[in-house]
Every structure is written in C-alpha cells, then in structure tokens.
Length: 184
Image (cartoon, rainbow, N blue to C red; front, side):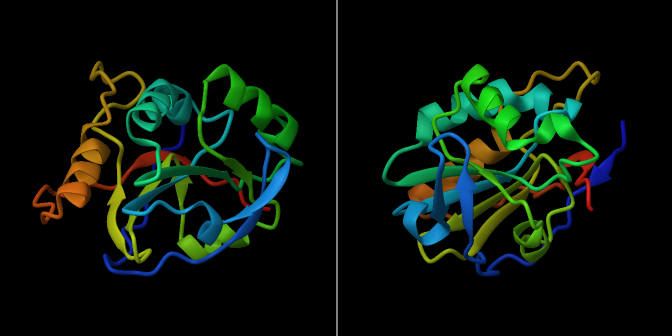
C-alpha cells in the first residue's frame, strides 16, 4: 500500500464548483446544487483503496449523523478506471449501496475536479463553510489499516462541531494518508 499524504491547501481557499455524474442517482450534480447551509464535506475516495475501505463504515456513520440541510456530504472518485476497473462508475454504485452511503458519490472522469482541489490521496477530506471557504482539510481520524486504532471520525467530527458551533477549530489539522489518486 502506498502511503501518500494529502496536500494541506490553505484554509480559506474557495471550493471549486463542479458538475459531475452522481452514480447513486444517475444524474449530474454541481457543488452549488448540493452544498450545505452551514457546511459541506467533500471526500475524495474510491472503491479499491484499502485506506478507504477501512474508513467506509465511519464515513457512512458520520454522514448519517450529520448529513442534512446544514451539513452535506459529497464523495468523489477521480481514479483512472482503465487501469483500475474496480473504480468504474458501475462498481461505484454497488459500493455506495453496500456501504449505505446517503450522499452523492460522484465520478470525476476527466480528473479535473481532483486537480482543482489539489487532491492527492484516497481518502482525502475537506470541510467548507456556508460560503464554500475551507475550514478543515486532512484526515478523518488517526486510524489506518493495521495500526490497531479504531476509526471514529474524531478529527472530522470535531471540525463539523466547531463549524456548527461557530468556534475556531484549535486542533492540529493532520494530513490524511492513503493511496495516491490513480492519474491517467
């Protein structure tokens, strides 16, 4: 397994808009159509990465706990499906059903969205405020496959709580670690 860290882009950066296929609804969606009133969690994930598989139950639980009008969750897969067919849109839809995702799972076929977000790995997490300004980027929590730390989503959970409570997040924001995005 590659251990690629996320790029820690500047807080306050504005989220680039996108218009991508949501494999769960078979319709195209944009960020402006799907953003939350208070915040939006954008996750770069994929189907085959062991780091993502490790945290899928936590992602699903967090989304169930928080996904609503105030906070929205959006997942994006940008991997090259020619060389990594397990990440195809058809298999993305199966993955979303198997993991009980209650949020859009978007296919970034051109990889332009991943490049605009400077995404580097799967999983890679971003939290934007109501103005789509970045307030958190980095890891979901300290758990990694094989490190015997339970995945609890504590870093993202804290970031969401701080945003909802309108308080500064004083916790150290650590890069996520995962497989590199599979570029074409």
